[in-house]
Length: 115
Image (tube, rainbow, N blue to C red):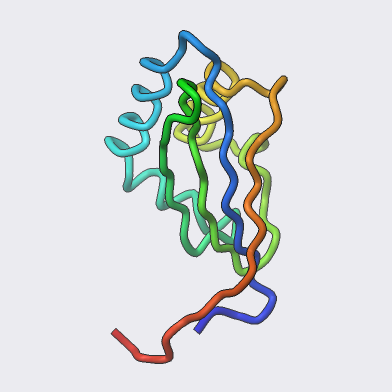
């Protein structure tokens, strides 16, 4: 069961036009180094982090779904090599001059069944 103070977010970020191939390289990098990524999650109090992509009006967006037990360390201050590469890709790919698409959580349901 998720702690009542869990932080659940879903937010999408526009990729700089012309950098779509680099963004896909970034997603492949994270997949290829999944074990190293998972090792960094406890510092962020991250229980679940899932990444999605979609195209809206011809523009690639990368979406992050996250479930944190509490506000954790900022990934940009991490000394982990995988986090540092992740942040470098972010800076090269995400168009911070455009607004993100932040979804508002309306409801959250979780089963009490142990898997």
